[in-house]
Each structure stands twice: as structure tokens, then as C-alpha cells.
Length: 336
Ligand code: NAI
Image (cartoon, rainbow, N blue to C red; front, side, top):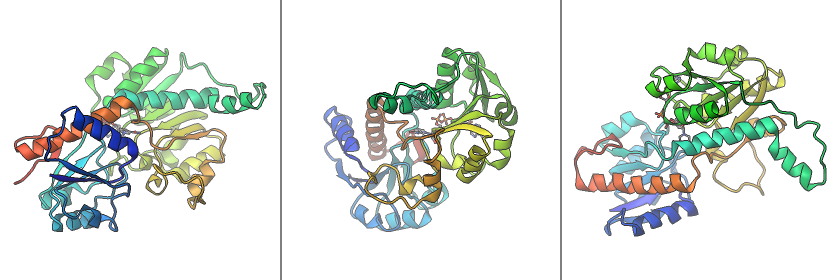
């Protein structure tokens, strides 16, 4: 089976080859690592492949899926949990097998959400630079004690639950909102509706998937309902937040601080070294001007444990396909 991996970085190759050596793949698998993202322009790179292996910013809309199907590709394996980037109706109609990695160290993303909140709160990123320059002044580094603060977790699934446990461990009061709250959340915090959560939380952390219902969940109206000066953390998907509305709320001082690991238009920016290029995205550039905004480039998942899990489970999904039968991680079972 020939598998083309799009958006493949050197670390992907390292962990896939390690998993292969550890016996997670059989000898029939031929892996082709392509650095480029899957788009309308790059489908031809999958010529001769049985499967494509994709990541968060690869485009799997109807046109791309039709092009892949016409080339004989019959399986899509996602190296991620979220599947907002694939047109599942089109995939089903075209008879694709589609599988994902539903959980790869939820704690990795939860711990990154904590790192963002801690950094923003205590300004350790600024302190790091100051001290290196011999500036030991504290002015501008004032934070709040996390203990006793209220943290709102939007989406109490695997990552939300792990995040809630961490904040609870810091002595925070934890609120959660979710149309289907995890039963385990009852031991950690209080389930409330999203408006109550926004009104009461000092820190709001987003952990729900991106769907039509959650697109721009954080918008002008919901920002106005937030506690003035609250901190917003998004490690889930960029389009949960209306970035322009967030910029306005920051300018009004309604939103106290913002940390994002994901960005609405990240596909044109993230996962590449663009340090020698001019960034054309004015919205992103405006975000970079705020001292109370912290952005990381979609690295919440980026731990050894998570990358190992992604490679191993992806191979298991492919083996499932070759052997036939039910695949637990399939969004679309093989129809042949
Ligand atoms: P999950 O499926 O375990 O949990 C998602 C939860 O969100 C579910 O409990 C669901 O009922 C809830 N939900 C759905 N609609 C909601 C709404 N309107 N309001 C509140 N809650 C809602 O998913 P998991 O594993 O916790 O992942 C969450 C998201 O994190 C993924 O969808 C993905 O977008 C993102 N993610 C980000 C990574 C990163 O590197 N930054 C890595 C992995 C996932």
C-alpha cells in the first residue's frame, strides 16, 4: 500500500519510521513524505497512492476528494483528532475510508493551555527577555494569583476534562459548558450554560470542536458578555473565535488578555519558517502588536508522547483498512 503523507515535517518522518521499526506497520507500506499541504493544486502528488495521510490544514473539500478518487486513492487517514477540514458528505459519496487519531495525549494540549495562561498571567516571556538584557524592573509584569480564580472550560471532552483537572489542581473554581457534558466533569466543577460561564470566568479556555454551530462562538456579542478584563485561551480551532471582534475587544480593554495556539487563517502561516518573509495578513500582524496577546503556532499537540501515538494509531488505522472489518477510529468505514 502506497501512502502519501501531506504536510509532512521532519518530525513526522522520524516518528513514523520509528513506529515502523517497532513493528506497527507491515512491509507492504510504502510511505512518501511530502512537505507540501494538500490543496487543489497539489493533489497530483498523490498519483499512484492508495491512501493519503493528512494534517489539520490540508484541504479535503469536494473538489480535492473528487480529484483523489479519480486517481484511485481510496483512503484518507488523518494525523489529528479534529476533522473540520474534510467534507464528510463528499467522502461518503465517493466511498472513501476515513480514519483519524481520536486522542493523542489530551494532556499535551491541556498542559499547553496551562502554559499559555501562566505565561500571559505572569509575563514570563517578557521577563525572560528583560533579565537577559540586565533589566530587573518588575513594572509591567504584575499578574494575578490563580488560586481562587474561576476558569470556564467550553467543551468538557478529553482535552477540556484534562484542562479542568489541571486548573482545579491550582485551586481554581472550574465551570464547564457542553451540550453533552462528560459525566466525570461533575467531580471537578459545575456545569453551566455558556453565557453564565462567560459572565463568571476570569479565564475562558476553549476545547470544543469547530462545527457550523461553534464557528465564531466567540464574537462581538459573546465578548461583551465576558467578565471585563478576563483572559481567553484557544487551543482548539482558530475559527471558534472571530479574530476581528477579539481585536476590537482588546482595544476596548474589555478582553484582558488573549492566548491562541490556533488562528482562523493559520493555514497560510503556521508550520513553516516565515521569518524572512513579509506577513501579508494584517489581522495577524495587528494581533502581534498587543503586549497582552500570546500566539503559538499550533503546537499544543507537540510532545514526544503525542507524536508517537499519532504514528502508531495511523498505522493501526491503515492495517485495519488492509485487513478489512470494522475500524474503531473510522469516520467512514471502508465500503469495498
Ligand atoms: P472531544 O470530542 O473529546 O471533546 C469535545 C467536546 O466538545 C465534547 O464533549 C462535545 O460535546 C463538546 N462540544 C461540542 N459542541 C460544543 C459547544 N457548542 N459548546 C461546548 N462544548 C461543545 O475532543 P477533544 O479531544 O477534547 O478535542 C477538542 C478539540 O481540540 C478538537 O476538536 C480539536 O479541534 C482541538 N485539538 C487541538 C490540538 C492542538 O494541537 N492545539 C490537538 C488536538 C485537538
